[in-house]
Length: 469
Image 1 (cartoon, rainbow, N blue to C red):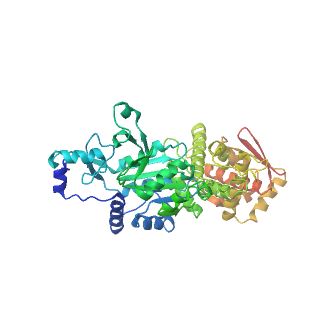
Image 2: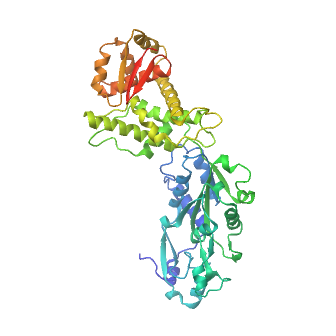
Image 3: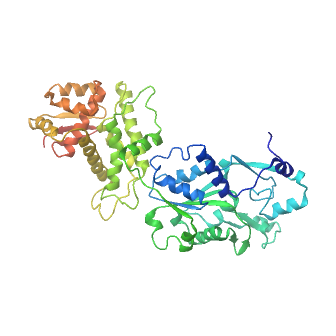
């Protein structure tokens, strides 16, 4: 049926007015009963974070998502848009600064229009769910941005400063009947926090001392890092007290979950003119680098290491392998340990060093250390430690093996023809006859021997030579 275009038609259609929190509550219950997916794309939170969000939604609370960077806080907030109605009606009156409820307008212009016109002459338009969400980053946000300000242009036009008509409303009043999200709450100016506290408590606003007494209907969401949120003075106690539920997020509890998130968010095609085949151990190493960085004494634990660290490094590794495949004509291209040498470009700036623990360690040096530890950790899960000794003995006889991100895979086979068959042990990590895959396995073992101080390494211009120290 065609959508109502007047207030009279809207009443005849039987449409019922709900607050935004009640609307979300009812739609959420319906989706649960129908077995619909509630938070698509959210991995690893099924038994921890999601149940807490569910309870908060049913309690009709404003929420704070508390966690370190890269824990899907913003994504979770944005996903709540799915719980809104597909469209809701509003008064289509140009003078109304907000999307007023046709049955109960909160603005002076809306109430006046209803008083002056019969219902069959009151125009109705429809507000899409995608447009009912607004988000703001706290640093640099001013009171006028999210609450409002006196509009000088209106004053110049003769409007009295003591009336609602003189005001320019910010994001929160304009999100009346919608969702507003504020990222990094502790970085918000204290004056703006007071304004938010007033909205959460009284659902009204005060602009330049002029009280705008109307009932703003909005779901307010916040995100914050625990290190700053729990620091005294960063968030005023009255505002903390008015937030209904605090949702604690976390990093993936297992490496496999981290890999799943990494591949999902990287969204990089492995097909195409130069296909790429990624051994699972290389996926594990990329994610393990992030895990080790989160544990490292050289990295600031309060800041955390974002999932974007893994995502960017995964894309860089694949790009390096694809570049080699295109230049050398290898298909499929297989990522190697030597490709990880390019991770510096995608990692710089994503690690915040602990100034008390880093001493003379630079960010590239920290990255090299956590990469070596990640390779050793993954390798030990694949191959018994005792097998390393036999391979290391080869180097004691003066054997050198040169590898590199632009060395053809066939060159690896030629180099291995000069050493004993003990190297067959290296290929157990990813059984394959493909030369490119075997080259990747070889570099994996060499990197572990180096990380274990069994052999030495010299690196120059993208080529690496391993030998006995």
